[in-house]
Image (cartoon, rainbow, N blue to C red; front, side, top):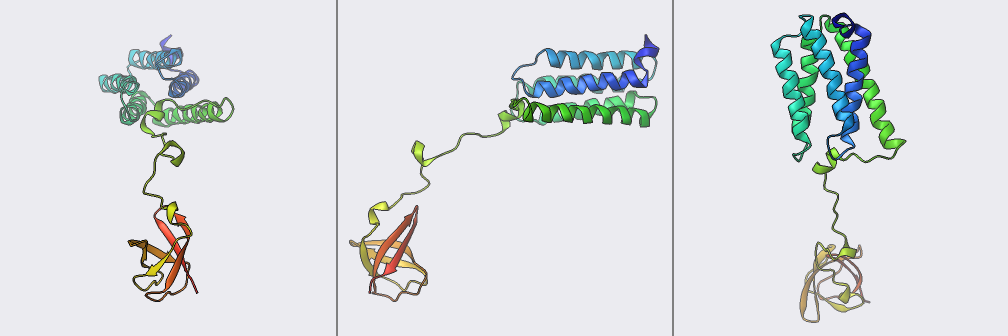
Length: 211
């Protein structure tokens, strides 16, 4: 059994199952069957390599720490714990392998297949990435919902006033005894010239000289 579990092909299969299991858990709000299958595959991997004398206690400690960090990730906001957990797992795999090159190839194959499964879940099955949605703000402040970044002075549309300063093109005008910061439509407007509000875009008020 130990010889079977340490076979390069079996190692690649176990790591692939573990990678796919972790990827599937990214689309789940709770730790489920896919995660347990992935962890069980890793346990088989480390059991075989530990019994064969290839994996030391340092690799096992990293493995356990990685599993705990990934598990903790499902109860904490952000992705720091999960990222550290995956890094600890990959490092423990390298420390457990007899041949670093062979282990690197197995890990690379597992990562490639996991990436394919990841994008298939999004593109083909239209799944949502539940895990990382905790660290992304999806709420938006729309005008339709009553959120405004500033006062929209649409009441000034069509009103006329007098340029208090020279508009080059920004300046100040007086409309109904109120000082208002405006910009001209593009041209230079002299002081005391008559102007008319032709456009209001939030806090940006555009005026045109009245001849």
